[in-house]
Length: 613
Image (cartoon, rainbow, N blue to C red; front, side):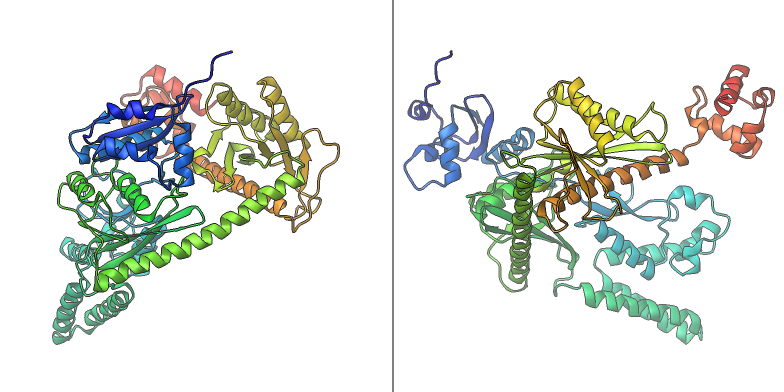
């Protein structure tokens, strides 16, 4: 039996600790990372953890587990900030404040084609054309694109659709596109629409309106009343939009507004996006490990993790960020953000007038969102406790996984796995499995394959085991789960099948428990049943979405694409020569071999692929 480890000797460690800036990493006895922090003065900052004082419960728990501290000295506080951010994202320490949602924001993209296209875009902005945003959500982008169609007839169709038109589509008929695909608008006129759309996206609504007014008056003076009426309607629509979207007298303002709210050990960060004086909407974040942290600490952690992306330019940084609290490291953070953005970035917390009202608006929204989140979280916790009681478990389950199968008459079967914990869906752990090599429509085989792939990875040390494994199905599916768990020697997991009742109505589900003799039926008002339904419905949604995507992709793919040696040019040559895939399928080997670039051997492969029988 190994001897117990001696407690961490903080005095000896602090004696030799430098006073220079840097990053410190705290570890427990098992070598697991506990916390990553930065400091302008390492000796002073780390000493504060071991000094007598009114530390929070969280800090006391952290200090009690420290067995080892590592230090990295940097030249400047800014370098320490960058290193801390990278380490937090890579190591995900248990006691650091962590952002759960770190996805990139969507944009509106204007292509650089001869007749440019407006479209939804998410990802790195390395392509050609212009990007407008960021927008807080995909819905905000789609709403803006829908609005743009009503105001400016600029095409939004993809290039494949655009280049293969022989007549104008429905968008032209309802006056949401000017028909450049079939030459119904001149290049000059179309570029005018594009220029007005760009001015609108830049917040220059008044300039667009002034120009349209001049054109309307000129058309009226030339007695072209039909054109004047078009301009009049466009001006009226723009004015209505301006009334709805205008934020302040500073029409050129580009900034983010950030405020924090804390309550009951939880926190909410609210970010409003102001671009060109227009409010593009807001996004809500709920940082993890926020218990005991003050708003300034939360705000500092959020700013570094949110804006300091791994790749410079990946996360947009506006010229100014308005803050609900002042920060101790405000100057250092502004300097690092300026370096990342390649221009000066201001962090402003002492605000007056309209800008102070923006921050107050963000703070009010943060408080409201946090109250709703806490109510939902308390409700979810109650459901977990009710499930523990309903299933007679010794402890409250910490992790639930649910599997579902989706297909259309056996075509393109997809299995889904969704994960819930006491805070709700854990979307980073969601998985989909494309099911292959089974009899089409065999749900038992599909479930067996998906569970085998999931729990084989668990045996290899990947991921965490669930406390409860929900299966969307009855006794047959539950037996498949038992077989997989026995084959892989996975123990300690309760398997529960969620079978639809005799009438298949919600609220009448029967729970088929592993080892249970008869199905368990919970009352329709049971919070435990509501949790099971919520998880089951999420698994169903995730499965059917994946199946539809896979089916649509398969139906867009030509059967010629899987033939070795038949590249895009030869496929196009074949389709042009025969007039379509059906005619290619009707052709014999000799006919196929007559096409330029198709050898006899390749022709045989094509024929065999199209005639598998």
